[in-house]
Length: 199
Image 1 (cartoon, rainbow, N blue to C red):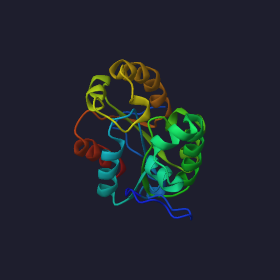
Image 2: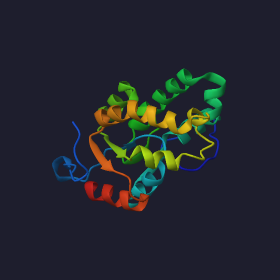
Image 3: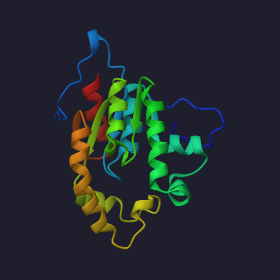
């Protein structure tokens, strides 16, 4: 799921807040088999942490944006430019339904994915756990200062825009999440914290 190859026409299979110390109860003593969904603001580390978590837990990794690109043959930026954000969000919700139905994935959602209640409901409907990677806004501003990939950030007032958008989105991430993870540390450290919750 993590490669950048274009998809063939057929569909491809996708690779109440608690603290980060909370454990995930295993159903009937079995290892948790639902999906682990990472959410959070742009630059919080969903992909870099997600890949490491998948490796640590021997799971498949799915980057939702990459999945959409594989299915459409367009980059996220191209979809935004050609079809607009509304069309992208519709494609995103369709992708959520598809990957949420899988089992045993670590899913890196997009920055806006869990802002739509129907996407949150879809992840939960199939038994997934949503983890919010919580990173201070100042750290996000620094991580994203030279970003040239994300359509929403291609503007002169980038730092102010990030701060404003973060303030709006952060409460929604917390509302959607089952578990909040302090993700200001390096990705390898954050991944190990998550592993401890699911072993």
